[in-house]
Length: 29
Image 1: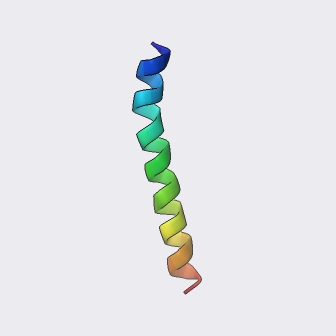
Image 2 (image 1 turned 120 degrees about the vertical axis):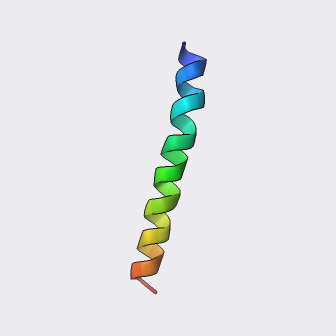
């Protein structure tokens, strides 16, 4: 169960971080 959760949650967290970072870069350009 724990490996299943990490496989599902990890890509979601990475996607949120990338989206937030891209949004931050766009504002500070």
